[in-house]
Amino acid sequence: MTDPRPSLDLPWTHVDDLYVDGAWRPAHGTGRLPVVDPATEETWGSVPDASAQDVDDAMAAAVRAFRSGPWPRMTPSERAEVLLRMADEVEKRAEALALTNTRENGSPIAETSGAAANAAGILRHVASLAAWLEAEDVRPFPAGGAETVVRRDPVGPCVLIAPWNFPINLMVIKLAPALLAGCTVVLKPAESTPLSIRFVVEAAEAAGVPAGVVNLVTGGGAVGEALVRHPDTAKVAFTGSTPVGRRIGAACGELLKPATLELGGKSSAIVLEDADLDAMAQVLVRSSMRNTGQTCYISTRILAPASRYDEVVDMVTATIAAGRQGDPLDADTVFGPLATERQRDVVVGYLDSARAEGARVTTGGAAVDGPGYFVQPTVLADVTPSMTVAREEIFGPVVAVLRYETLDEAIALANDTSFGLGGLVFSADPARALEVAEQMDTGSVGLNFFASNHAAPFGGRHDSGLGVEYGVEGLAAYLTFKSIHRRA
Image (cartoon, rainbow, N blue to C red; front, side):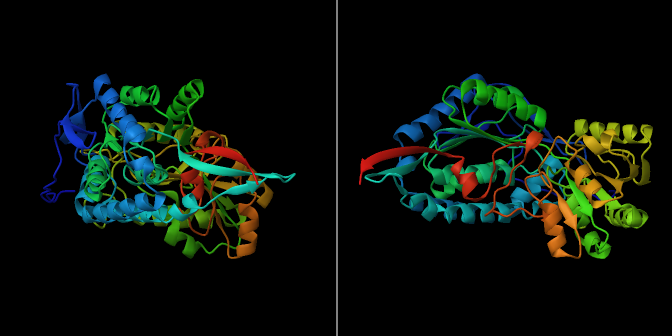
């Protein structure tokens, strides 16, 4: 990282406004939140820390737009046309969005350069669900003589809260179905990544989303709590840590508000004895260390058969060690910094505990001297199921390799966790891999690769959350149902 970084001419750095009721307007609050580049530790931007008045104004705008504005009264097909225009507008902003995202959270530019295209893909797929939303649903009484018309109505003003690791896509998977359903929204990005989401808001405005339908406030945890507990909030969708998700879930339970919570993970990759390790190496980083390990669903526990344990450790070590770490703005960088100083310190603490509990470091294992919040990509061998690094979500560039003797033991190890978000099975036998996947207690499993499908539900079990996103199931989370009974 000795070469000078390119000059970055970004449209938003130090901003004073929030987006409320169809306009960028100055915040009422005087507090500020810094935006720090994790690769340089430079404070390069700042945003308002919204006040209680700002929260009330945003919610009031969302309520007005829902109760008396045109958006909920448009047909789903009409709203879908706006989403399609919004997808085009997001793609027009791809380069600036990617650069801003990388400077906010240190994600390699190779990762963030696809954020706009992925967000546009989500918008377009959700728009394609308009026909499902419009389809008439009439159900006869079992005894005959009458029938029920089932109506799907928007749930109301929604609060959407996204984390810092994928600040665009994890917001858009909430925003797109909420909009198609006819809801209005208030967006609250993570406090360390508050600028890149402005491109999405700008795209919504350019696409013709009416005033008050999309609102944006920035701030810390107090702002999020105020939005969750606001009396006009009809639903909350949150992606983030399990501890914060518990607090939001408790508040929504107390207030009887529906919530979608996509939380942490500690997923496993089960390597069967017949697995092709060369093929596994090709997908290992994306499956087990995507975004410098700051991805909720990745399989950071690799379960290897005793007969091939050393072979698997050697392959994983060589693959991870070969990944280039450095400036996230370099297109060849595989591993960037951790997103925040706090997260860097958390990961280093886990590495210390791994050594103390008897794990063997085969590559990496330490923080990198600054500037920047870098931790070496690390592989831990001889990890046992009781070790802290085998049980808790690390959220950094650390993967642990555990040994199993029988397939039943491997499945039991994979399920011996409080989480249940992702998972992998590596095998040359597709039928056998499917059989193993069906025994894993988790929301999603990949066979020899892992990826999210916009058309299929994605969500966690147990401590990994409540509800799902994507697919018609994710759209249904923004609907409330009414049954109208009539004589046949």
